[in-house]
Amino acid sequence: MEHSPPKPMTPFDELVISPDLQILKLLLPYTPPDQQEFLGVFIKIFELKETVRFFVNARNNLLPSTGWNYAASSNTEIINALKPYISPSKIEVLNTFSSLLTALETGENLSPIEIMMGMLTPDQQNMYEMYSEMFENEMKGNNRNE
Image (cartoon, rainbow, N blue to C red; front, side, top):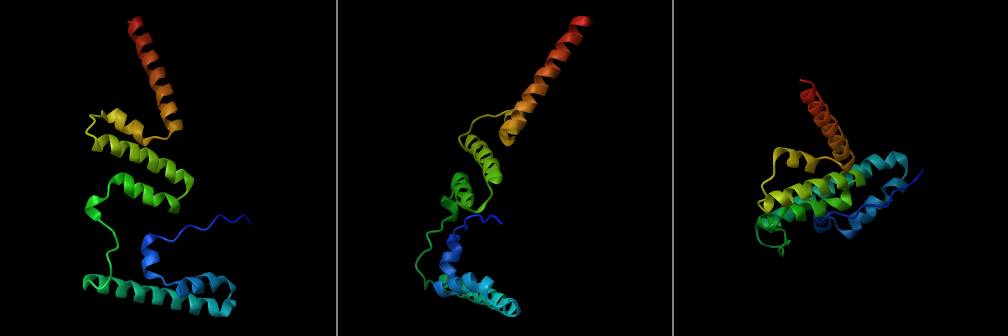
């Protein structure tokens, strides 16, 4: 069985999951099967406890800033943050979406067809253009015959 490389921890997980808890998570597949369910549930409960503690402390200003800033995040920043966690095919869709958002953010006036084309994969764009040309040629031929 082929193994894909492990995905990095999300920035949020890095804030709430201690190194000890991470080790427990890594050891879970190697524990006896009759103990995996208990240990897995224990890990998730502990993660939830740490998450609640994190937000309580953040609300009470007991933690340093996370550096998270909703207002300062651009669509491109958000899409780039997602890329390490998704499949290559979804990255292609995100790149297309990112290009479209960039065009909209810069105030370019795009027609509905340009917007649609920006949402298609390169193969779909080629297919659209091929059928569009076929349709145009058919329409020109019908106009000549009338």
